[in-house]
Each structure stands twice: as C-alpha cells, then as structure tokens.
Length: 109
Image (cartoon, rainbow, N blue to C red; front, side, top):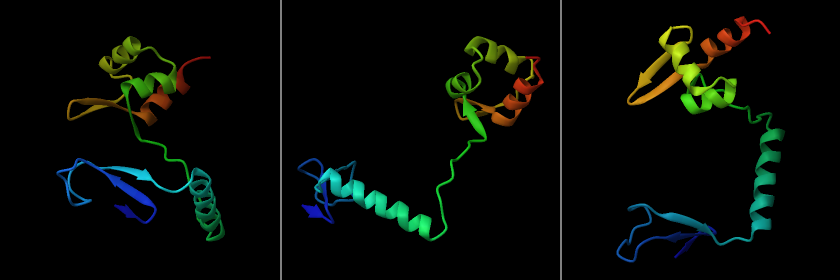
C-alpha cells in the first residue's frame, strides 16, 4: 500500500502500518527527494532557522578515542587516575567531553 509517496514494507501477517518493525521504501524518484530536501532547507533558512551542529556533552569510549587521538588503554588509565571524568550509564561508560577537552588543553604541546 502506498502512502504519501512512501511504501510500507513488512511481513505478510502484519496489517497495520504502525505494527511491528516496518521498513519504509520511498516510491519517489531520488531527484525529487533531493529537491524536497533542498526546498526544506531553503524554507528553514528563509525562516531564520538553521541547523546547528549538536555537540554531545558525553562521548562513549570509541568516540572519545577518535575525538582526542588518545589510545583506548591510555584513556582507561586516565579515567582510573581520575584525570578525566567518566560516568556509567547502564552498562555504557561515557566520558565528559569538557573534562577531556580540559585535560588535552592542559598538556604541553
């Protein structure tokens, strides 16, 4: 069934578009989707709103390694020495980005 230029794809036993895990496949040509995106961005710019990049306050360990260039083992050592603040959220370890930035800037170049 097509709905607003998008086609719902699911298992045959699922009847409602909101039931279960559905994939959405666009039935519009890619060029039309691109122009829709460009129009939306132009409208946002004309309205005075713009997309601002989101800077996360906390980073998971792999993201902190990529962000800082510090190795994973060294990062864990710094967290253990309490030179970089970190927290547990569920089973995930997250690193305070401000603390990481402060540590990096305090190091002699």
